[in-house]
Length: 487
Image (cartoon, rainbow, N blue to C red; front, top):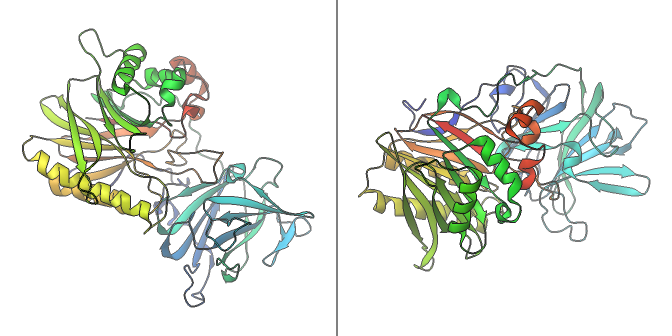
């Protein structure tokens, strides 16, 4: 799978021809004609100009993709993008919004704070017009999914046809339009209204005849990446232990560990939950990535050598962080595994995005000097990349691996449902589920065989019972485990 690949995104699952996967790739839309084509008609200086809009559906979801013709963060726009839906196609219900009679609810990307409308907002929301005024709802009420999380010119979203909380379901016919408003509330662009007929097209049914947690082709190396939500693995270890026993990884990259004696506590928990073996012990390396509050770690039950990568800061020439790393000796090949956690938040071009870029640049500067004295056949850079600004940190990681280790690729794997690749979700926040966690590999020694984003809610009851899992075990963190099998 790696042959001839300098750097790029390696997708490890085929997509059924009639299924849209919310992953930020648009090959599955190629046979779907636009529902509306909006001409270039933006006012001078407008940050976006809505162009083509595509719509399709299955019996569970409505899918919408739109081209904004500018590279922007959909959840950190300088204004608001409204997707106005007359969900039931009945003009006598709902309200009139932006010329759509019977509008039942509106999805708002980057809703502004009503108390400070002149400032930019963040996230997404749902607005319902009532006689008493506009009621704001969570994007999780309509099952909103979005990709990509990083800045782009085109996006795709999924919306539940049967939303929660008494919202009007999307029926056999619906009408909609998109409109963009600047920070002053002035409408800068709007599409024609379009009408779509929906039929209950069957979704390809996944019966899960085989256990989704089986290793691909008997893979000798299984990696699991998991951001464990501010040390929750120590505060409430039971669900994490059940997941660890079910997944049975050889190597784990952790983020968001907290507290004292992390290496000792983590080692003891690993030995209790998933013993390495009679003649083996877990090897754990911990690094500081959050200014003394947050730590990352790499743990291996295979023979491994600890490595501490000190990353100097270009700003103060001091030590900003230490990245935890292990060198695995697997079948005579030396594989370097690094747990990475880039700063969160912000949008493209902002200070947080610049910090992510600096961290990647500093990492490869350190690797350049360190790897010259080492024989490294393969590299795994796994963790929480927090790609909510630009995609450049991921691209720079792949390019850096290709430059120093001949090849570099980001591995894309689906959730069990096959409907998205989102690794993060939190209904208590205004941000839409998306892929924040990535595994990026370099060198010729590693062949990815497959994997998944693991959500226990998507695992069939028979397999949950077989593994001793409970329905909400992966709810123990706002991030989901990302599992990759390697040969």
